[in-house]
Length: 200
Image 1 (spheres, rainbow, N blue to C red):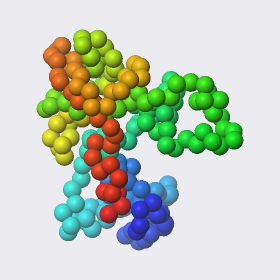
Image 2: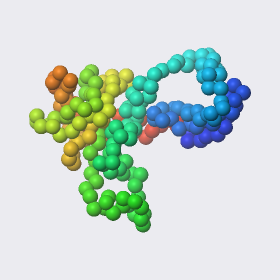
Image 3: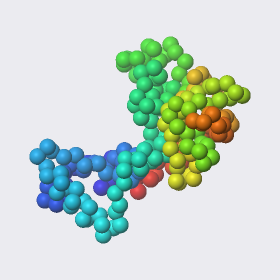
């Protein structure tokens, strides 16, 4: 199945709608089921089929790690109604040349520089709500964080309070016990910039 394709398939004798979209910027598939599907049977069929390929079960924590590594923003976590698409790095999806759409006037009248960036720490994990400091002054807040096994360091998203040339700056994160962690601001995603992984 090619990336971004979807269709109905027979899985263990049941008709399941399968989509190859990969929510976590990973080579992933989503299964959509009618309420009448025997979900327990579907689960057992998948486990049995996958066992021969070394498939392992994981918690949603693994999805969170890949979401953050892949630079995927979560609504009402990393962005909310107080910011616009440009401020969270999603401006490429907005066509301001389009004649009219809801919010166009506001976007044209307001500053739309980016406020949300990636942040890399050492072994410490940036946690939601932690303060990001520049010369001892709070300039941003962590919105998502995790430890990246791929990069072997703590990573997360930081939303700044004002626009600046944040990328590549060395800042500090205040930990839960007031300990200071050095951090670097980076562009998103953290790796696989051309998003080749989901297309394999």
